[in-house]
Length: 105
Image 1 (cartoon, rainbow, N blue to C red):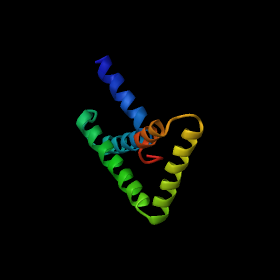
Image 2 (cartoon, one colour; image 1 turned 90 degrees about the vertical axis):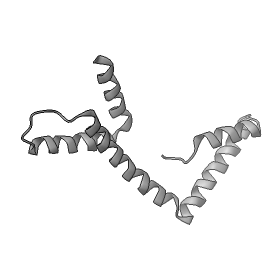
Image 3 (cartoon, one colour; image 1 turned 60 degrees about the horizontal axis):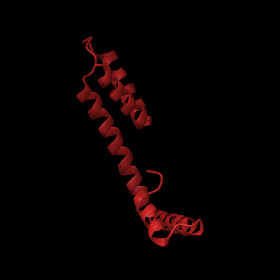
């Protein structure tokens, strides 16, 4: 049981605002409910998935604008150049840049 509680807490902390939204929504649902049972893990997971999906959709919409694409390309290029200037080989710098993916995700 301690392991489950630890994993649940770790997930909530790692999701940050998504977890806070989920806990708020769960609290509101339990306030209006006549049942005294706490929400199940499946209910909590569903709320977090929904909130996370909404955030991802907004981020992707923002990333798809021409201005954002240009900024991301400049960021990635500048990162690559900075890594090479710091002594990484071009292959190492490329591996680092491609492993990062989109910034601010």
